[in-house]
Length: 290
Length: 274
Image (cartoon, rainbow over all chains, first blue to last red; front, side, top):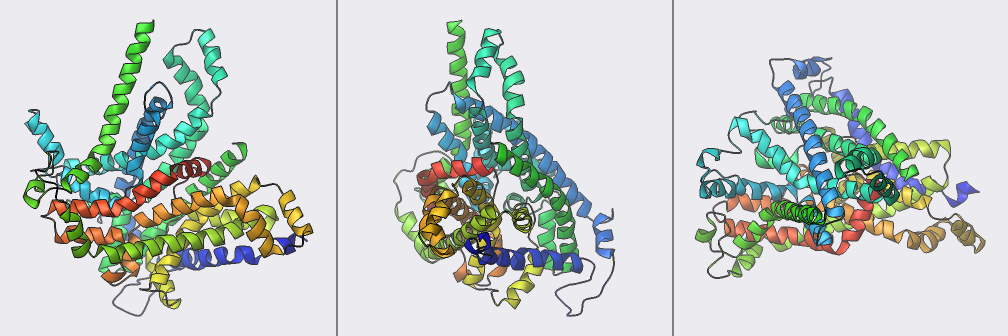
């Protein structure tokens, strides 16, 4: 009976195109990462673990890209969570024009990254850009920098842009979490004479833990796959200073050495499968409780 | 005590204004400079234009071939989101209602797609086999595929809250599976479907990698790529680049302002980035 009302062909189209366009390429990728597949010759030879040795060898730049990806992921998790939490608390209550601020703060999240990249290229411009001009105007000339071309600043600038774009998104999720906390806890704390900090520390943070877990997982999955922010701002430069895994993947793509590129994706695929497994278990559980 | 509270309020209000200003400044900067002449905009700052140059927009529409790329973007995002809703809603319905072990596995298998990276290299081969390489249809199909896992995740959760009695009533009235879904269930799913549509529309509107690698000619490009290309050609004319940017983000900003409620409910129920 149920089989008849909820037929398999309802699932079949979604499942079919999902398998053809994502699962099949991933499995092919795992196989081809053990080969010397490239764009110049038709023949493909099995070369064992050579591509992976290349990736993890210290003579090449790939470890640097992996390293940068990890730095990017950890710093955006910390910054977006802290700023997002601060914003969520601020726009929750006690300020005027709450909805106006919520709309504004989320706005950067919907602007296409390519466009954000162009805008910030102007803002970061060392001669006429908004940041350096402002610094000069208030007499802080020594603070002006070549934000995107100085090795010491380029990666930090990229992280700053990504936090600018992403903090509002985290705010929205945490705000929903805060609003779900019952007022009675705070009233009880008031009776006990707890101050604002104690209420934050002992009520808000513990009860917000599920939402904080979700945002951390989201930032983690996003950070490890980071590509567009780096691509539009520096494309890995100056030199290789700001390369991340995905810009290297696309570097290989343009060079035509598909074997190494696909091996890089395979490494990422394995890491993301494990993380994704736990992430999805976690989120499906939140769903049932919430 | 009261005075303390007033100061606290003031500090809060000032803090949020500062942060909101930081969030909006880059966008305002673009808006102001879009109305300037090229020399005025050569240093992008907040000085007001002497005379508002509305013709910047018509120049950009013509030189940036914006009409063509706008039509492309609308058809990519619109059609792929529709396709995505259709296949995801039916699949989520069958998966959520008939929770046999195999279907639970399928659900998990599909939503793992939220986390997993696409393999852009081998996807080329698949695109060639399916004859979709360098075609608009190919991009529409790929965009739907990238949005399916997340859409099924949201719709599956929503269908869990739709009473089964509806299905039974439909069956007693003699509905087959298709009629049951389209005339009884889908209307109930509308809020979730709108959320899914808007989120997948915004995500695909902002995406640029798939067209960059799987479309070979500029006349098939969506707006984001067109604006990037325009930036490459007219780097010196920041006024035109700004005007082009405004026209590119205007559709998403409008969709956002109109659909805000749905976007936020979708994100917080699913809490996942597409």
